Amino acid sequence: MNDVRHVLVLPDRDSAEDAADEASERFDLPARPQIVRDALAGEDDAEDAQWLVVVNDDDGELDPAALNALAEEFEGWLEEED
Image (cartoon, rainbow, N blue to C red; front, side):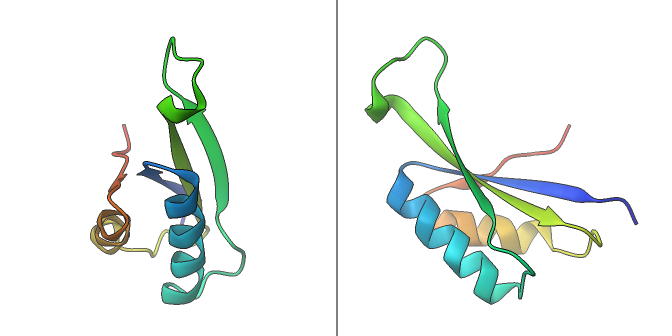
């Protein structure tokens, strides 16, 4: 199956770090998901940033609903794929 990337959008770095750790454990991932700072368009203030947790799903087997539930535990959401 094709490689799939899931992106969890979280409100702050601490939430992103915790969600990445939890995703690694809960879904038995081979590597910790990457954390990326995503500044909102036109905003320079670090407080106006979202944090993304990028989960690589090499086999396409992760359940998007379970990933969304994880993101919601940290006041975030799973970004919908186009």
